[in-house]
Image 1: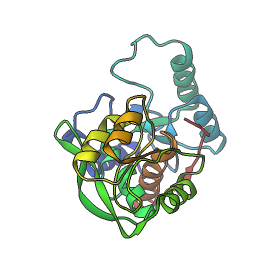
Image 2: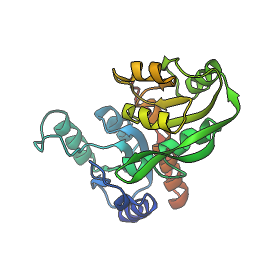
Image 3: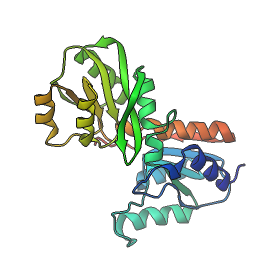
Length: 252
């Protein structure tokens, strides 16, 4: 069985974790037993995910949203204490990759969405502190809005929020997974017909309406399912491990 330190070093290098300024610690957040045979991947660190991983006898849990965030208190209590206690008593490791996973050109959340929607990769998009997190997607032939929303719904599930204010034919799609409503302005500047993200906020309604661009919010959790799955599968193939993605349902 490979060592946890081997997986850690490989994943940190693969995702180039030092290349982007993040507001979370990327990589190992809780160090459990030294060897790894089974990996569970999931979108967010939660007690529900940890319990399911323990039931499957996982050695390592891989997530996109970890347990520690720069703006949160440093007191270990409440749900954080419960999660830490569960991992420690079961000797399970937790590994988290946030923005480095969003922007990876093959395994990242945004790259995976582009691939799964069968979009051609266009110019870089979603500039964050000097790094582009995503790219424009090009659709040939063009989609109608109804066809585009049908494909998005089939991919992510759930019922997306749709603000239908753009052109009849959709060819240029700007996308950024998770919570990125502030990028609607960049999408408009780059000539997007539609902006796809996970969440919306109040001001996007009138901006989209007045500027003539469609806005689709398909869910924060749902738009960030694919990157961590792809990374888990990649590590499993690379190190001959067992991998299982566990989707703890989250409608938000």
